[in-house]
Image (cartoon, rainbow, N blue to C red; front, top):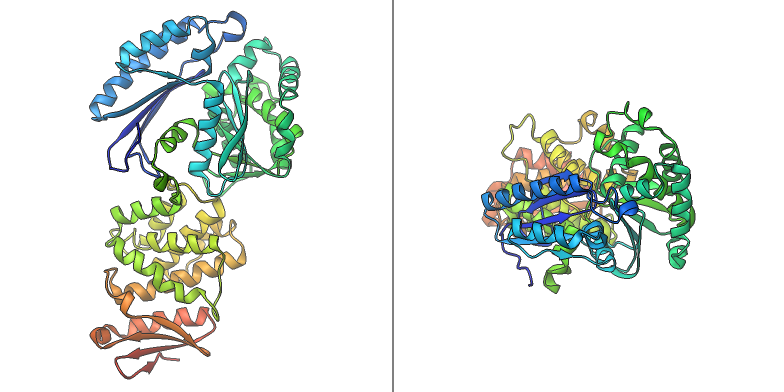
Length: 505
C-alpha cells in the first residue's frame, strides 16, 4: 500500500520488547505530527534470554493495552492502521501464539519485523526526521539493538544484536560487570563499526532519550526538545560511564528519570559507552523518529520523500496558523533580495532556515499584542516539527520573536541566544526587522510584496511602492524600514510611485 498525502489520520501500533505503543498521526505526509500518543511499558521481553518465552504477566498487560488501543482507534475514526512487532515477539517460543491473540483483538494482521527490516525502518526514520542525515543509526529497544549505516540518506550495512535493555539485564543476571562483557563480545562481531569514526551516531529508543533528558537537566540546557539534541562524543562517553555505574537507589533520587526507566537506564548507558569507545563518532544525536516514522516514510511516494521535512512542517503550520500562507511564500521571495550580493550572502542551509522563518513569521497574530513575541518564540522553540538542529530551531524562534517585539527586548530570549553564533544572531535580527517592515505594508496578505520590491543601490537599500500601493507608505513604515537598512549598514530609501522619498535619517 502506498500512503497518500491527504489529511487523513494514520495509526501505528508498535509492539516492542519493552513497550506497547499507539501513535496516531494527523496525516501520512512528509512531516507527520502526532495527535495521540500512548505507551505501556509491559516488558514482554523481560525473561526472553533466560526462558526463551514472553513474560506471562507482560502478555496479559500487553493484550489489555491492545484492547484499549483498538477502542481508541475507533474513537479517533482512523482508517489507515499499521501494526508491527519487534524482537520479543519475533524470537520468543510463544511469540506466534501471542501475535495470534493480538491480531484477534485488533482485527488486523500484524507485521513481525525481521531484525534487518527493523534496522532499515529505524534508519529511514532518521532520514525522515533529520536533514541530510549521514552517520550510524542505533535503535535500542527492550530486546535488541539495531545498528545501520545511513550514508547519503540511504541505509546500507545493518546488524541486529541481543543487547536490548531488558534482555541484557536477564542475560547478565543483573550484573553490570557481566553485561559489559556481553556488550563487548556482541559489538566485536560488527566488523564495520569503524566506519562510524568521525561521523554522527543517531540514538533511537526510550532508554537513550531518558539518558539525554538527564544530560539536558544536568547541563541546564535552554531547550526541552529532545529531537536532534546533540552531545559531543567525549561528553556523551563521560556521562554514559557515570550513569552506568549508578545503583538503582541512587537513580531513584533523580526526578528526571521515570520509575519505569530506572531499571534499564544503566544498561542503556553501558551499551552507549561501549559503542562510543568502539565506533568513535564525533557526536551522539538523539532522534525521536524511529521505526514507526520510518514505516510511514517508506510508504510515501518518491516526490513526497524528496520534500524538505522542515519546509513541509512550516508550510503546514503557516497554512493553519497564519493569516495567509501565500503571503508567507511571497515573503520568502521578497527577502531573497536582501541576502544576495552586495548584501549578506547565504549558504543553502541558511537559505532554507530563512524560508522556514518566513513561513513561521505570522503564526502569533491571534495572540494579544503584549504576548505575541514570547508566545511565538515558545511555539517555535518547543514545537514538534523536525528537520532542523537546535541552533537552527533557536534561530527560527529568535526571528519570530524579533518580528513581534523589535530588537530591544533580548532578556526573554537570552537563553536561546546561547545556542546561536554571532552570524546567526545577526541574521535573525535582520530577518525580524524585514518581517516587521514587510508586514506593515502587506498586512500579511498576498499580492503586495511581489509588486513592491527591495534592491541594493550603492550605499542605499531601496524599497519601491508603485502607484497602486503608494498610499501604503507611512511613518511607521519609514521607521521600520530604516531599522532594517541600518542593520544592513545602508541608508533607507522608499520610492513612492514615480517619485521617491528618503526615510528619516
